[in-house]
Image 1 (cartoon, each protein chain N blue to C red):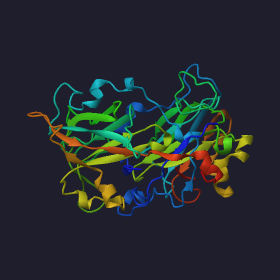
Image 2 (image 1 turned 90 degrees about the vertical axis):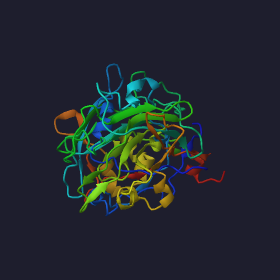
Image 3 (image 1 turned 135 degrees about the vertical axis):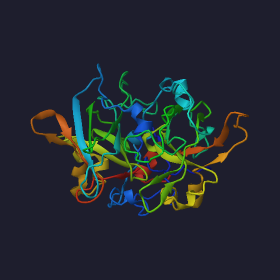
Image 4 (image 1 turned 30 degrees about the horizontal axis):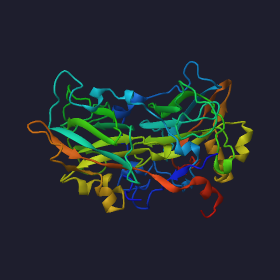
Amino acid sequence: MNKIPEYRRYIPGTQPPHLHPPYISSMKRAPLQPLVALPHTLSEITGPVFGPEIADVTACDLTRQHSGEPLGERIIVSGRVMDENSRPVAHTLMEIWQANAAGRYLHGIDQHSAPLDPNFTGCGHAVTDSDGRYRFVTIRPGEYPWGNHHNAWRPAHIHFSLFGPAFATRLVTQMYFQGDPLIPFDPIFNCTDDEKARNRLISQFDWETTIPSQALGYRFDIVLSGRESTPMETHAHGEKS
Amino acid sequence: MTLQATTWQTVGPFFSIGLSWLYRDNLAGPGVLGERVEITGRILDGDSKPVPDGIVEIWQANSQGRYAHPDDPQEKTAESGFTGYGRIPTDDAGRFRFTTIKPGRVSGPDGKLQAPHLAVSVFTRGLLRRLITRIYFPDEPSNSEDFALELVEASRRETLIAKKMDGRPDALEWNVIVQGPGETVFFDV
C-alpha cells in the first residue's frame, strides 16, 4: 500500500471540550470516558465526495428562495476555505443555516415569540471554487433568547457545516459578527479556551465585498485540518523518518 | 503549518433547517453490490433519555472494501452509484434507521486489513463538537485482529459491535450511549 499522510491533530486548547458546564446541554451529552486516540487509516483520510452539481445557483442566495424578498439587512458572507498548510480547499460542500432577521428559526421547536418571515427559510449550500472561495447572499440573522440561564441571549450567528477532503476534516461551526455586544456572554462562543481561536469565529466587515446600495459584506475565512508532512505508516511503526 | 484549524461549535437544536436536504438513509441503492443490512438504534444521553435532536453520519467502503474517494490507492474497483455516505436524523424516540451494505475490509496500518466497519460521526445539540465512533459487525472473525478494536479496553469493545436482532437476519441494532454506564467508545481522530 502507498504511504498516505495523516491529517494533523488539533492543537490543545483550540477546540472545545465535550463538557463545558456553562453550556447546560453539554452536561448530559458529553462523554465521561476519555476518547481513544485513533491513528488515521484509509477510513479517516477519505470522505464523501460531492460534485459541483449538488449545489444549484439559488442555493447560495438565501434572499431568492421565495417569491418576495426577506425582511432584514441584506448581507454578503464570503471568504476562503483553506487547510492548515495554507492550501485552498477546492470544490468542497458547505452548508449554512440561520435564524431570520427577527431572531426566529423556521423550525417546529423554536418557541421564540418573534415572527416568522414567509420569504425566508434560512438555509443554503454551496461548493467552493477551485481557489477555495465561497459566497452566500443572505440577511443578517437576529439575536434571540434561549433557555440556558436567566436572561440568556445568543449573539447573531450563522451555522456552517463543511466536509473538506476527508472524514477527518469535517467541521461544524458558527460565524459571529464583529462588534456584537452579546459575544462575551455567550457560553457557546466561549467554550474554547484559546482566545485567538475563539475570535477567528467572528466575521469581519469588508468594504471590498460590500455592494453599493445593495448589501454589506462580511468576510469569514475557514481553516480545515491539513495533512501532516510525514506518512502515516511511519507513525504506525514508530520509526524515525 | 501556517494556519490553525477553525474551532468547532455545536450544531444546536435547529440543524434540520440546514442539513435535512442531504438526509440519506439508504446507502444501498439499486444495483449496489453486497449484503444488505438495516441498522437501527437510538442515541441516549447521560440520563438514558432519548436524544431527539441528533444526527448520525456514515462513511463506509463498498462491498469490495473500496472507498469512493480519489485518495484510496487500493487496487479494487469503485462502484458507480455507491457513494458510501449517509446522514440520518433521530426521531422523537431518539431512533435512527438506515439501510446499507456490509463493507469489505480496507487496508489499515502496517498494510494489514481492518475488519469491516462504518465510520460514524454523531452530532446533537449539547455536543460542542462531533463524537466519532465506528460500527463493526457481529460474527465477523476479523474483528479479533482489527487494530482499532485492539486499541479499546476489552470490556468496552462490545459498544462498537452491532447486535443481531431476533427473527431479523438482515437487521442489526447499534446504540449510541453518549454518557454514563455502557458509554459508547468514542475516538479522537
